[in-house]
Amino acid sequence: MSGELGCIDVPVLRWEQPKWTQRLHRLISGETVYATLEWPQAFRSTAASSSREGRYTFKRGGFLHPFVTVRRQEFEMEMAKLSLDWKGNGELVFANAQRFTFTREGLARFDYDVTDHRGAHLFSLRKEMSPIKHSGEVHLSPAGMGHRDIALLVTLGWYLAVMVTEDAAAAAASA
Image (cartoon, rainbow, N blue to C red; front, side, top):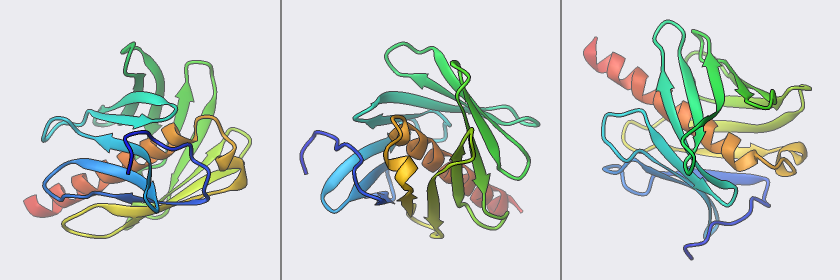
């Protein structure tokens, strides 16, 4: 694998966590890496994503009204905010008023479907259940493959799925 990230041009991709001891995840298809998502500090919610589209940071906040902020890494200014409800569904709103909906598929699963403001389906994210390593599949629709922000949306969806999984594991361990 080269160090250059590929342009997303395939309809099915896979998220993998190469080492369970590291919070580094890669979006791949075959030998090509399309994006990465990494939490530089243990037990923190801030993650950095890299793709051909750019480098972004995601940070979770709020308790009663949870949200995730999206920032372009070079500028550290908020460019979008994903507001979540108690079921894990959310609406992502960019500073330019562009909107996307993240719909969680049931409370027992950590899967998401993402649509644009017109309701056009962009992709489905299916997270596999594993107590040790995170992995899952992304299925892009034709509309999703042609979307200019697809890598950002897919990495944000994966960030959300991983954080919800880790929250559920922590809650189960403390019960």
